[in-house]
Image (tube, rainbow, N blue to C red; front, side):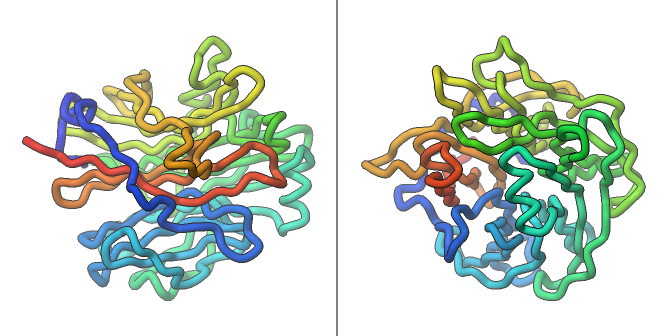
Length: 321
């Protein structure tokens, strides 16, 4: 739980870190994306740990201050969109498990895409279990085309009754990008974190053609408990004239299932002559450490698949009484 009310949260101003991005793409990968963060009080060694995916899989980065990150290890190949959670003395790393690279490239540009939710576990963030399946394809809204399917963007949320696993499903083709993005937000529930999930019969969030901010597809959703309600942090994709864009939106909910829009937290923009977050501000992770809230996110400069590049940065807000 974040130790504040919705009124306190909406009164905060998130300021972009001046030296963003803090993690840049590397090697031949055009992106480093979908950050999931452990603060020092949640890590086994008192350091910041950030998990994100590049073209070749999910990587772990570590830092003393949550700003100066160094790449530590590749965790799993054929993987993207990670979510790291500590439950007791075990860490669960959920992720979207992909096809081999060639099949993935064809699927991304409109071919047959197949992905499901897998996980690995670890005690020390260094040695990991073998991957195991968590959510398999079995719903029509998870389907992509005639033969494909997509389950992505896992986000585990422990409750008093058990565990909720929010995830994205389906894919929508974005014409100016020449690739696809997740269509729906869905929910599955279980008594344990690693298996036995029961899916809701229908998505909990769908694209809205009448909405200014969610008219293309839903992107991903991260859910948090405040003192007085639930909130969702969502990066829906929307059509803005001839171009597509993505921004980070704040939603609220009484039950963590039915959400309504509150405000925009971060919009695409050029910063100090840099275009690194000019067109898309994507998947994010909100963490609290002391009296600071940090919203880590990845952003993209331009839409087209061959020229767009994605890096990771953060915005910060100070919580006052």
